[in-house]
Length: 158
Image (tube, rainbow, N blue to C red; front, top):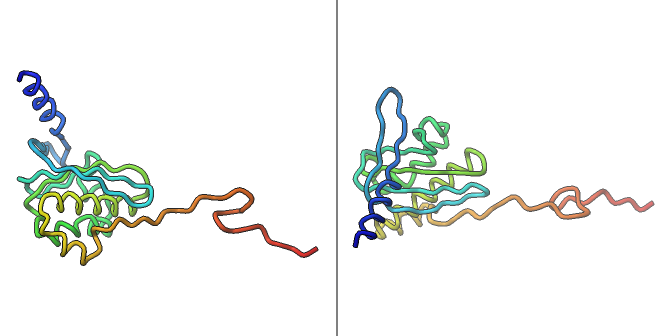
């Protein structure tokens, strides 16, 4: 029984994430969370959704508005606006790989997956907007004997 209690204490400590805001304010995410993974191209986003929140989104230890440019921020917020949970949940995201655009789409996919775990009734609306499907397009690898993935050297008859 003590081992179970120790494990839950360790999990609570692991789920506690502190992120700096402007000034001296800090956002602390504590308690239970729903985790999901989102991917796009070479970017991977690990998302934690905390149910009772104020609408804070922390990406790699910074606010989402600081981390992403404005056009990518709208992409990240799409599933939350569609579900109507902008101010009801907190999100902690760790994203690696790719560029800002690919990372934003990976975060969007991860948030969608976490919201579907949170509430299965959201699936038809998310599916209709195309947020559930992972965009599997990646850069094709270069093959030997070619200049690029498919570009062959120019052929000459003589």
